Length: 191
Image (cartoon, rainbow, N blue to C red):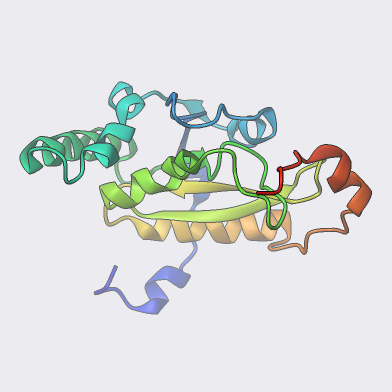
């Protein structure tokens, strides 16, 4: 991406020629189960599975604790699987987080949910997050991420532009009554 001019990313791509895949969840025991609200957002494409991805948390857990070449080889295998699937015209659609967004000052249930975005950072794959509406339950924003093959950012930028036009771009979260928060959020005991 560094050698390409900004004009290169302004060009229009024929999105009808792109292949879309989705991964519903990472199927990782240490992460929360994907909620239906998030699952429904990504069911627009061909479902794929990466068996090696089911153990992706080990890449993170093993960092610094094992032989570097073992971790690097697992990383490379997963990157190769992803690049082979996507090629130059494929995009992987994945939730950004397995649950609807938490309310402000409410901690997520588990920090391991970050695996949904962390994985692609570790692999060095281009990714872009796009808002796609609001949760009908909480009225908070929902989003997806698009992942491309290595050095293929232009299709992600074109897809993000298309999604922004289609969904109206960023939308301010609506008012949430304190009563709603009180009745739906877990209460944490004071320490």
